[in-house]
Amino acid sequence: MGEMITIPLEDYERLCAASNELSDLRAYDRAMAALDDGDDERVPADFAKRLIAGESPLCVWRELRGLAQAELARISGVGRVQIVNMEKGVRGGSIATMKKLAEALGVAIDDLV
Image (cartoon, rainbow, N blue to C red; front, side, top):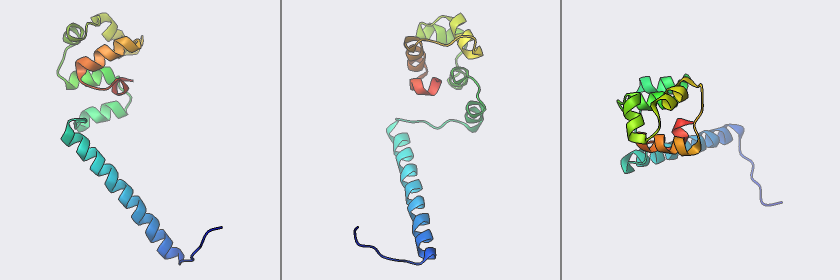
């Protein structure tokens, strides 16, 4: 066994709290760097709440981009009826379809799943 030291529990808890705070600060710095680099974007609270509530990510991102279903269909090459069915949860889309939609919306496929 390696060398060991003993410290009071209060000191240990303070060190753990400082470590957690440092981890949070680093995560914040990474998030801000992603925004600055254009790798991520801010999402308005009302849209974020809709996503958290379980609303169709395809519908939320489409509306955030200000697109009608027909316009998204034209841009992505995916049929409007298929978009309607995906937004309603009636049918899913293939990986190829999700990729087309994600590219048209300027998001990662993960954001639509």
